[in-house]
Image (cartoon, rainbow, N blue to C red; front, side):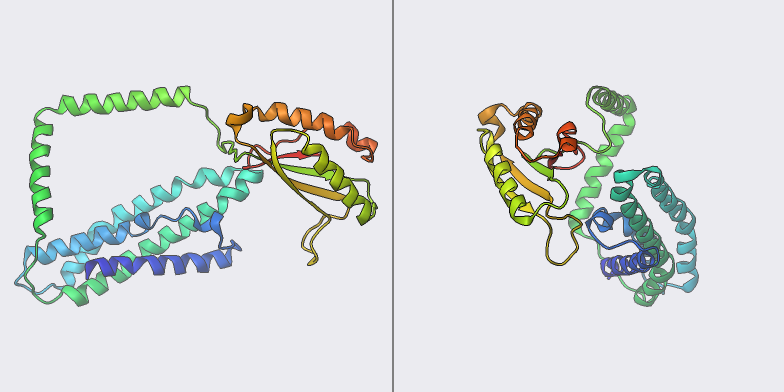
Length: 309
């Protein structure tokens, strides 16, 4: 029954988080819910349940009293409260982000904090009461033979490590030096560039252009892009959808460009983009202002890079 009681923490903490998310206008999507770790959420309940079970096994022939459960809850309340605060504090730097980083990571920080608080409340309030109702009667404890064998092995290993502490310190020191060395040599970026082998092209045509002319311009763009042997396919769209949720007009063209495998042409995407810039600049019909702004804008924060005219 102990695993079942611990598992009850998950739906309660998620319900608690959803209520607070509704109050703080945080939508439930992959950005807000994708980083929830159930292991962290149930950690407080596991620790409290372990303490209660130890008191139950200490006197298996005597009934479990309310005082014993109360003392068990008080024993872990303070350390688990501050441990949860430490975990939540680790997410505080995310609230100092701005622009795209803020939109990506602050919903996750809020949601994880709400879930941790909900899990802590359930562990300190509901777990003691439910555990008392289930384990108050005397019962003979059952010990898993596999865990007992693992415990014996662990005790033997622990004695050898304690007898020669410098070996453990040497291994730990080597791991720290290795981590520092890797941290110095590898690249560091908060939002690393993710390349999925594609391009996203946006072309802004003169305002007021007819839909038929915009379709012809999109055809010219596709033909120009297909001249490059590195291109696998291109799919373009003109204007916006019919439900009015897209702010674009017929003067806007978007195209998804798929590239051939990098091993077939070298994979120098920057050079390819520069050559595509020069080729697309030769298309007749682009306004002079757009021609003067034919510098490629690369959205390095997203899987597909974007050339914006």
